[in-house]
Image 1 (cartoon, rainbow, N blue to C red):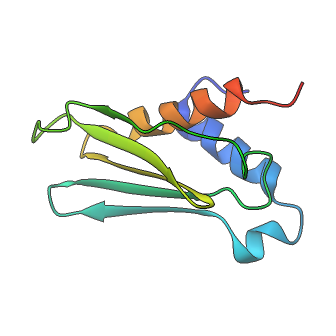
Image 2: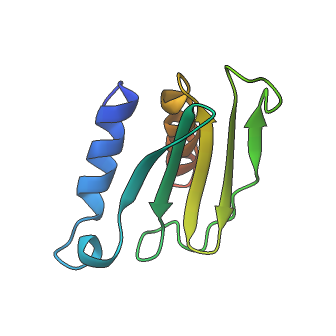
Length: 102
């Protein structure tokens, strides 16, 4: 797999696409006015759909460098500062790689 976080996320997304999944599920990246980013990754139909995720955060009270990740129902969510998108993708990546089927 790729070393770069964005390339890894692209590869993960492509690996989920089976002709059906991508029509109802996917990845959304947006922005917030702090400034910062939001990330939502659908887990339904993936091997992670029933895998627990413990909420994680870093410098959540900092206005510049901060992030928070959590799982809600069938989705992975993250919010972060303007320069922390790579960090939350790496949190997702570590969770995925820790929970790879053997």
